[in-house]
Image (cartoon, rainbow, N blue to C red; front, side, top):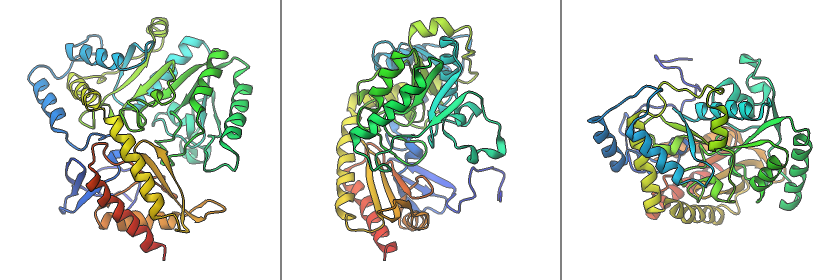
Amino acid sequence: MINNRIIYTTSSPWIFNLGKAEGCFIWDDTDHKMLDFTCGWNVTNLGWNHPEILEAVRKQLDINTYNPMETTDPMQAAYAQELTDSLPAGLDVIGRTTGGTESNEEAIKTARAFTKRKKIIGFVDTYHGQSYADMSIGYRPEYVSAIAPMAPEFYQIPYPALYRSDLSEEKLLGDFTEVLEKILMNEDVAAVVCEAGIVTGWGTTSVAPKGFLTSIRELTKKYGTLLILDEVGTGFSRCGALFGMNIEQVIPDIATFAKGISNGTAAIGAMVTSKKIGNEVYDKANLTSTFGWTPLACAAALKTLQIHKRDKVWATSTIMGSYLKETLSNELKDNPYVGNIDGKGLEIGLRLVTNKETKEDNGELYRNVLTTARKKGLLLNGSGDGNIQLMPPLVIEKTILDQGIEILVDVIKEHSK
């Protein structure tokens, strides 16, 4: 039921009016304070309303706020230089976008135009955006039946999630590689779309075996298929490296960015590829965006990236992520309803189950934990069925992180009785 003039994507009772936000905390319009373990789903990685980023935007306001898509702007050029200098060699030209959906849409168009192939391979239960093409990458047909038919020539394969498999890590990776090679050897696939070994957008934080991205890269090169790496959730220090591709030192053909790119200050995304690919498709793939890369958004994104690099935020993400995972594992090791705690960097999943043997998700416990935690001052989010996706600000202090851990552990124990 719609209760006001805005259509939300859920009728959840958890919807609330945001009053204010600062650092690691947000307040609703009743002044109820909550420690935020969501970051707007990996958007405000540097904390809410970071003062340095806000100041950069204020300065840009006095210079210029918009330029049309057929022009460039000094702030655009400055950010393009900073972003490409921060990426591996070979990722050196950028399609300007307003967010993750548009970035992945541009990536798919680029891959098809360059390879002259149509097929796109994605993974079941992964999220890459809200366009028809992006939803076709990972949404199950039953989830989108009301808006079907979806985009043609998109094919989904199972994601090799470690927790869901009884195989060894080596065997799971080997079986996955065999399946993928059988698909790619026909040499008719334009691109494989994936994240860097962890599912961030679907809420599952499913972790793949080590070597997942490396294997995909090797096979795509072998059969002339492009690798599109979705860095919307894994980028900007979230997973313990500046970008997810740095974890296994893999260079994709195309990388997409959004969410943490401007720390939530303005709408901006990027589709980054090589000059070779860019020169081939720039007049064929229709890479246009009316509001892509406004000077204000670029000012916010430039300062955001500079802070990540200056403060080596990814190192803090690694340290705090290991601490969070270890502490939760120790505190909840005997809890019969905690099935798995895993992740990369400070992207940690805590899965609630009805039975550890069957690994069946416990949706009721999940909802009870999120509801009670919010009342006690901790904002959580996740898959909606059983997995709590923990995404605290990457700049969080240990004492504040401990406050959140204490609330989370107490609430899980309370509802496990």
